[in-house]
Length: 172
Length: 119
Image 1: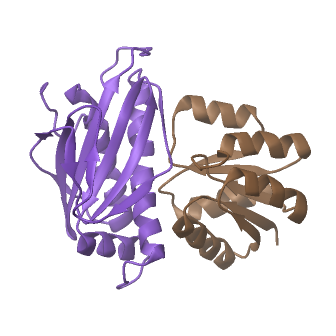
Image 2: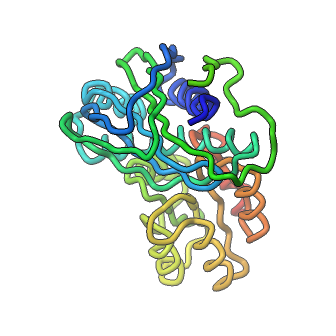
């Protein structure tokens, strides 16, 4: 997987989180994760198809997910109920939508699936390719962005994929 | 005030939009969680406006937009989506969408766009 594919998701993650929780998160160190890994307490899984294919997975603790959902809902506090689950799933949708827009601008036209929320720390997710992982540190805790994408050979342009102000990772 | 059909697969987003639009003085005609339900409800409720997400199960918002415009060429549909690809925007506008709002959105902007679209 090309390291450039995770940059749009980091850029989008920072932009969307900053918009919905009114605080700019900081990105952490890039890491590589094997093709199968155990989820965090709350993980949003979104499929990507088109010029790149695979998954984007956003993982966080239930405490962080609940706090982010409350901020998105403009509520002081909430439980991680159906509405909070929907808010977090929509967060993943918004980040992925923006990220795939950046990928499209770089010539990788792609689409996203509706989000799926996975709960439970013993759930193993198998991807077709190793994932690149970057944590985003927010005031409410850490959110991990896991991106496992493979190029399918449908690229239409050669502009660099987005993420100019965020961490630019060298090829893993 | 104009009656709006709110279409989004996320319960959270439908709740946020209904609150925002109600506070802005719009009437909520109904809500749909996917494009197929949206097309059925459009025929049943005949709303003045539709606020349509794109990425949804069963039937996506672009397909639903085309179905609704086929049923009612005067339909006023505003897309509200996280997808900002030029291709998606062009496809929606060419299919008859009145406007295109990107998520996360600014509440004032949403109200302004909908008031313009309903005019």
